[in-house]
Structures are given as C-alpha cells and as structure tokens.
Image (cartoon, rainbow, N blue to C red; front, side):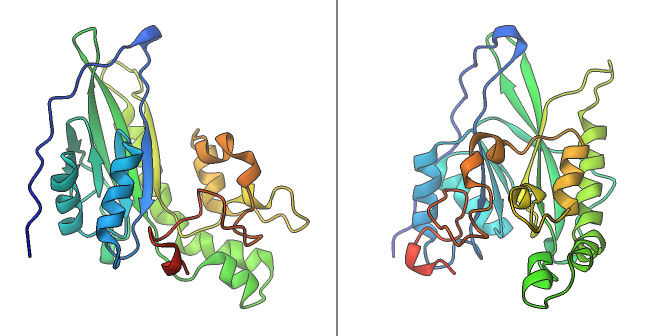
Length: 249
C-alpha cells in the first residue's frame, strides 16, 4: 500500500482581537475505537469541518499523532487534542485513571494582531463508560435517584478533578483568568435533555459543569435538539458516532 504524506503544521496567521476577544471553533469528536473501519472518512470529516481545535475521544496516542500528520496540525497525544495553533500539555494534580479514563488539559497559544499570544485552556475528558446512568434508569428499571447516585459515584469524581484543575490552571500570576473550554465523552446524560419531559432527572455531571461556570454551547446554539437522543431522532447533528451511517449503533 501507499503511505500518506506527513503534513507539517503551517505558521498560523495572527487573529484580529477586537475588544480583547478572539474567535475559535472547537470540535469534540468521539471517533469510535480509533475511527473503526472508517478512519479515512473520519479524517475527511475533520478536514471538512476545519475547526481550530479538535478534541478526540476513543482515540489512541498513535491515532492522534497520525491524524495530526495527516491534517497538518499541532497535537497533544496524551490529551488527544489537535490544534491549528501551538499547543502545550499542562501539569495536573490529578492524572488520568487506568485505561485512559479521566482527562487532560492543554494550553492553546493563539497569536493575535497586537503581536502577543492569547492563552486558551482546553480540557478533554473521557469518563468511565460503565455503569451508564440512563441504562440504570431504563434497562435496569431502577429509580431516578439510583441512576443519579450511579453517576455521582462513577463519572463525577474524575470530572470534578478536571474542573478543579481547569479553574486552577486558568488563573495567571497577575490574577487574570484565561478563557477555558471543556470537551469530552462524559458517558453521562445531561439534565438539559430532561428539562421539558415529565421525568426530570438531576444528572450530576451536567450540573457540575454549570456550577463550575461553564455553558453548554451545543445546547445554547441548538435548543431544538435537546432530548433528541431520548426520542430516537438521529437527524440531530450532535448525535454521531461513526462517519459511516450504516455503522451507527
């Protein structure tokens, strides 16, 4: 077979910075076991979306490196993050757990037209996948309180560690807080998907993010898609797994 040519990152152009703000596009993408049998389609999808920062889940260090070389991006293997801009992994007090579960945090250094760099922190997490709260609720037919307790005991601890580290690392020596984002596969439901239903469930991971001052940007921009997965609506763009529709579970 033929080998793909390595694409090295180009020197990023400086961004305009009106009112001390910059605009970045960020993609969170669960690539399903390193792209499954549609790895090239996965790369094509990332190339077409052309995001400034790509947070991958279910991607090995080898796949992250290969994706970066294919797309010509900077990368952090451990954090599974690709970036158009230079990237550095930050030291955490709470490293990933066994099996790569947990999260990592990087700093993206964005050049701006004023001649300096804006440091943006990006966290990427992959929380434990079992037990899964909605399955506890639906398949095991347990009360909502037990499903919430399951998430509290299993997914929430690692998420809290990432949130604490993000907050700590965002604080600069002069007391200014750098902007930060959190992406990932939380393996948990959001209370926002249950807000308009008769069976409201206080899922703890989404509340933890809100209590940490984060905003669910997908929910904010796509309010009509909330609850789509519960209704079996697979036309919502936020519901994805494989780049090949016939391989969707």
